[in-house]
Image (cartoon, rainbow, N blue to C red; front, side, top):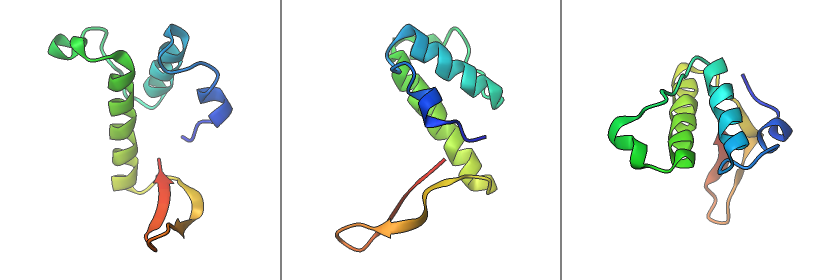
Length: 86
């Protein structure tokens, strides 16, 4: 499920509201982050969210339903094709 970018950028990921929004969006996909993370509680919350989103994206890429931006990858200055997958 791709999320509208304006929805994600409503609040910065380092803010309480931004973190709540991102956890809610992850929960909608079935990826529920626990309230207590054990040793990982020492990791900044925005880093935990980044890791969860990276795992969600990797899962979608592996299974095939991932989206890409741009639709057709563009070459960088060295000729490598560049795209964002999610």
